[in-house]
Length: 132
Image 1 (tube, rainbow, N blue to C red):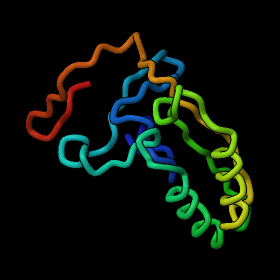
Image 2: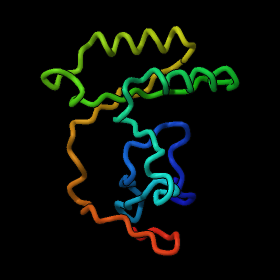
Image 3: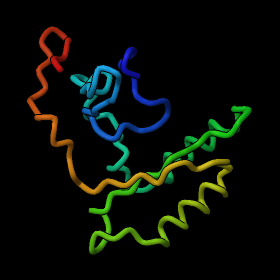
Image 4: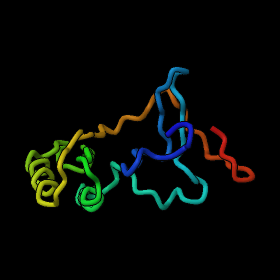
């Protein structure tokens, strides 16, 4: 996704700016068309729940020979006392199975911390080319 400046397949991006690891070190990367589409992206940790993404994976799964490994995303800030209820994780597992998703991979969690090694700057995109 670094070379093509694309998102990771069908996964929702975790943020408009992400940091990718490569042989050259940590590389900041912005989502495609950030200047014009920044308000259109559904970010992984801002989804109300995992059902919408699970539905997308389930539909695509019907047309793929092998299993798709899907991820779930949870933000602790959405839950009372900052604790993720096990009932929500179980509900997501059962819903995925019901919809025909064959494999779940990660249950990603957002603790609210940001990448401390990246200083946020205003997005500057003169002439359509964004500065990193």
